[in-house]
Amino acid sequence: MENSISPIHNYLSYTLAAAHRKVATSLNARLRKHGIQIEAWRILETLEMGNRLTMGELAEIVLMNPPTLTKLVDRMVSDGLVHRQVAQNDHRQINLLPTALGKKRMVQIRQEIEEQDAAILDQLGEGDSTRLIQLLREIL
Image 1 (cartoon, rainbow, N blue to C red):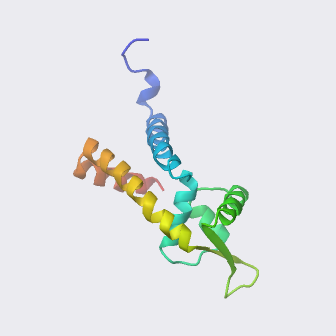
Image 2 (cartoon, rainbow, N blue to C red; image 1 turned 90 degrees about the horizontal axis):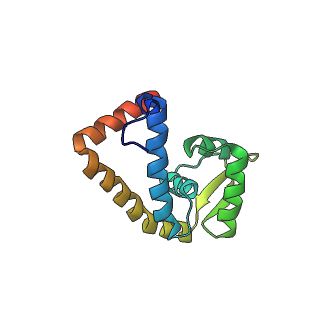
């Protein structure tokens, strides 16, 4: 294969997807050492803020569909990382809270996330990294 760039690389949608894939692959390898999936990290990181979120709210934040989130949460409950609690305002809803083990694991994996972000920052530079975040947030 030639070193020339394929025309598909000129599409923003493709380039975003390719960059996501590269970052996700690297992050998966880092988190696998801790027995954590990217989605589980997103859940723990979100819960770390201390907000009591419904499963629907959590699904939206962590970029998962509700049935898939429920299956992952079941595994995380079994692994002792989170526990479910009936919502105080609406007893039909369930809040998810990190356990002591979940909080400990979050501290361990946060370093991996920060190292991943630092590598990207080194590659792009602080100004471009900040601008990229701003630009991507405009798409959301």
